[in-house]
Length: 233
Ligand code: MLT
View 1 (cartoon, rainbow, N blue to C red):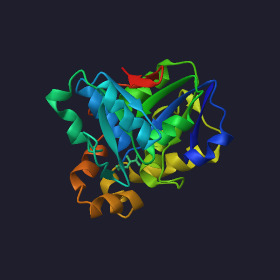
View 2: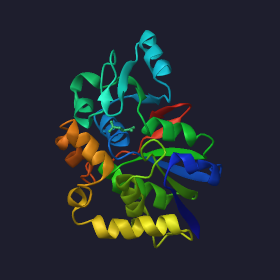
View 3: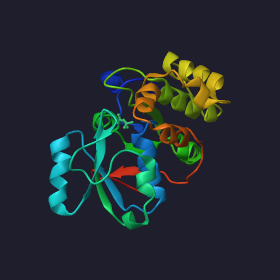
View 4: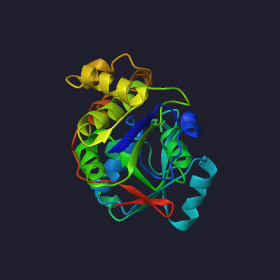
């Protein structure tokens, strides 16, 4: 039987060999939710960057620049990190250069994996269906917050473990802990997360609408995948 594991923070990636794995990168609030939304609305590609300057430089190549630092849109960028910004008709077919505080760093740290795909509650079933059909072992990489563990990414990881439990086994405690958390939280994700660190951080920025949307399962049937350095469908 195939195996699933959960890396609770990108700073723990040295513990997880990725060469034989499909890695699911998750940053529920809000990077991977934005990416999922963008592809569901016809964006052509998203090139993730760990560094702000590298992302900004893509303007010269007619990329739309997007992302945030500490939850706020970067000065001079075209877009920030709200999923609602990626629903704009005008962005259909666009190539986006994207950098975020944690999400795009988690993608960078997953380099070398057999496959890297993007997970969020918005495409939860699409992701688990894709994983169920595959042959690879699975690692869910939680973006967390600046190396620290967060609840929303861990709960998403638990949802993946729970939904795949008949096909993919786990023999470590991180997937087990994540699965337990998910079963506690699943009936009221928003209520369960109301005191979590990033929900509080985003609430201070008045972004309640984003939080609610990012916690809504199965809005989109897309599985963005990294191909030659860019995410595509
Ligand atoms: C991140 O990558 O850290 C997040 O997406 C931050 C945010 O909510 O904007």
